[in-house]
Structure formats: C-alpha cells, structure tokens
Length: 268
Image 1 (cartoon, helix red, strand yellow):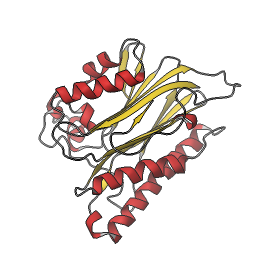
Image 2: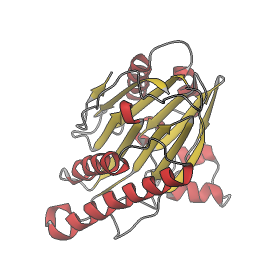
Image 3: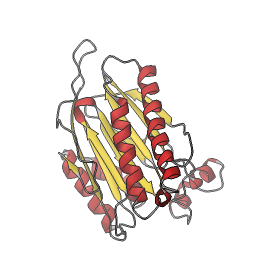
C-alpha cells in the first residue's frame, strides 16, 4: 500500500496548554490520536504515553490476518491503559488522568481502527464522508436512546463528557472497526477539538478536491480556530495512493519516518 499523510496538533484559541498528542508511523501503517485529560499537565502525560505505547505494542503487522491484527490492537490499547492507570496510583499529581485513543492501522488491502473515547476516525470515499467510529460519550448515549438529536448533542453542555477512556480504570475494552481499503481513500483521525467546531458537511468540504494531506490538515485546523478554537485541535489525514495486488509486497511508502509525539508536532 502506498500512502501520503500529514498530522498536526494545535493548542487552539482558548487553552493555554495542549493535552493532545499524535503519532504517525507511515512505514508500518500506524496512526494514533489521543486527547488527554486531568489538568496540571497530567492530560498531556496520558496522551503522550498512549500514542507511544500503542505504536510500540502494535509492532509489525505484515502477514497478519484480520483477527490477529484486531487482537494486537486490543492488546496495545489495554497495555497503554495499564501503564497509565499504574502511574495514577503511584504519582499523586497524576491521579484522575486519562486519555482518548483512536488508532488506525493499514495493512495488506485492509484498515482496522481501535477506539476508546470520543476522538473520531472518518473515511472520505467517492465524495462522501462517513464516520467510522462511535463516540463513547454521554451525549452519544442520549442520541442512541432517542433523547437527543445529533444537532442537539453538538451544543449540549455535557458534549465533552466521555463514558470510556484509557487510564481511568485497571482495564478497558476498545471498540474495533475494520474494512477494505480502496485507492484514493482519505482517512481522517481527529480529536474533538476539530469535530466539536466543524460538522460533517464542513469536514467533507475541506477534505474534497485535490489538495495534499498537509494542506488539508492546515485548513481543517485553521477553520476550527476560526469557529472558536475552544479546545486543542489534532488531525491526521492519510491518503491511499495505491493498493498493491494481494500477492504484492505492501509498503507504507509515501512520507516515511515517524512523527514527533509532542503537541504541535507535524508529519509531512
């Protein structure tokens, strides 16, 4: 598989610090966004630990079947959860910290996503944007129960309350989503600092056209800031340029290398 990707994190307009983190490892087809919580820099610690643990624990996915990749994803996120939770027990100033995790892996001609929290993964294909993940949040539960419409949920005072996170308890079970990759697919991973400022039609418009992923990431973050920038904003865009034949040798190609996991980092 041959890809082009970009990622960036921005503090936003209101916040003084950035508790988001991300990592991209194009040569292994691994992309992770994490949105930390906990204050006093604890949220930043949790999200940084999460992206590093998940990327490391996933390892090489070459030659693995779907169920093996799914097991590897669950194990990686649960390992990150255990490490973060243990730190909350041993360091007083880290008590209460946690983080979302949304991780995308591309392998062979498939994609798989592991998710905890409300950071989202989208697929833009054939000029249509589809949200692949489902938020672990109070308002999503209210939408599912029929008490709120999606529009009401966006502006609800509890819209940032999540019901599942990495690090808050001794164990966590991520949701896993998988599917087939096609040439020209665009994947977007984003913290709620982006999706809380821009609705899906706005995201789709910014992902359309022939711009490079780096330009799309910059435009997404810029537009979220123009709409208020109320939270830290992180976005990764991954474009699938080609999918190798089933008997071909897959390649992470494109941009190569590994991005910084520090807030404000960029991958080209």
